[in-house]
Amino acid sequence: MKNYLKNLVKEALLRLNINDEIEINIDVPTKKGFGEYTTNVALTSAKLVNMNPRDFAAKLIEVIKDDKIEKIEVAGPGFINFYLKNDYLYENLNRVITDPTYGSSSYGNGKKVEIEYVSANPTGTLHLGHARGAAYGDSLARIMKCAGYDVTREYYINDGGNQINNLTNSILARYKELKGEKIEFPEDGYHGVEIVELAKEILAKYPDEVSLEVVKEYGMNYLLDNIKRDLKNFNVEFDIWFSEKSLYESKQVDKVLKLLEEKGYTYEAEGAVWLKTSEFGDEKDRVLVKNDGNYTYLLPDIAYHLNKYSRGYDELIDVLGADHHGYIPRLKASIEMLGEDPNKLDVEILQMVRLLKSGEEIKMSKRTGKVVTLNELVEEVGLDATRYIFTSRSLDTQLDFDMDIATKHNNENPVYYIQYAYARICSILSDYNHEIRELEYKNLNSSYVLDILKKMYEFEDVVNSAAERHMPHLITNYVYDFATLFHTFYAHEHVLTDDEVKTEEYINLIKAVSIVIKKALELIGVQVYEKM
Image 1 (spheres, one colour):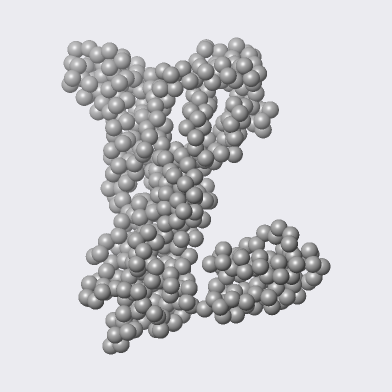
Image 2 (cartoon, rainbow, N blue to C red):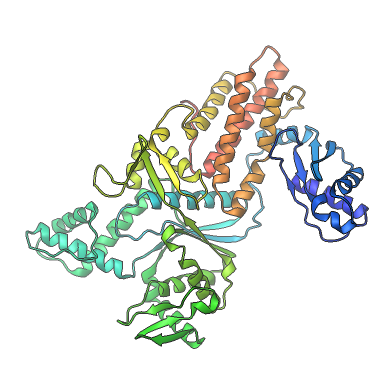
């Protein structure tokens, strides 16, 4: 409908001999009573015709004629508000109940997109920050696929850096400790309970002695398998697990360093090799090779991104932690140095999560005394509530995760509130045994019903917008508001009545509501239930 109205306005401008390329925005009014759609085109283009915006708006609506429009009004300083006939809403309702692909579109036009998220070092267990990134990345992948993008989901395994040596030394130290040897634990070692569990397993298999290489491989595989299992339990899967080590084995890291040197973007100072990122907008130059000959983590990251570019994606999305904010300029600078388009890369930074219980922040796990893990949180509050809450806010804002609200079985818990709307509809439909079919609607005209139908009509547009803007929380907000409209309707009107025609129309309405709720929740990895 937005495109439809945009074309009507464009035709009206042409009729008035205005041929300039004017941007026409069609929006849904924020306040009720100002029509279904509005445009500010008269405000933005009045200068072209030397007219007052209100007068120009009045002149425009004189030449807009269409049988879908009930009336058009000028409002405020020159907004044009469109009041539409309800026919398009009824057509859409029939589409919802008959088209299993409703909500999906070709909006993304098959654009190839790679989303990299989580990518936690395989040195421990996934915690709250990883969980938020996982929920965001997985939901965005679902939404973009629904909107017609060709999406690849990728996890970057940091198995080639110094952290793996620290992991190996940590496990070996615990192994020796279990054997009764006196040890000095590595200064940069990992202290998690999983390291002790690992050491116990290795000791059971290798009671006498064990090589460093065996410890490294065993530890890596064990922790990575745990991460994969935890993510699968969180309803998150990946298409590609990309190994950092493979970049070294295929000499891609060395090739990138040589390429940067050949292009004149490196220099030596203080015994180290530096990259001239300051020439591309970074606040200062960055070290690529330290004075001890070891690479900084920036170099393999550049090689990794060059590898991504070589795979032919139209867009790359990285989901990184808040501590990576300053990392973006140097990464984009490196990409530009290598002749690639840095604008293809979108880095989404996730902010911290505060876990609250009884109004107090929880920083430590009762079980381990360390950070609260993803598994512990899901065990405590459930998968659906965890996924919903992590997706309910924009990624760049701090998130307060209130465990008390997340575990309530009442309307205070937003995911319960939405799921209950679905279950309530299923209960009504179970008492109605007639076939659901397309209808011509004569009774769906109350304000409560029309509010639902208008919101339902927005669904595909919201999906496309969430995909394009990389904002899964738009879906979360939408489905909550949609469920609210249903609950309000249900409190004021009866679905099953003595009037068979009216009942049949209302059954179609609530069936369509259940379909949209289910589709919306699926996009954020949340289930629906027929009984609650």
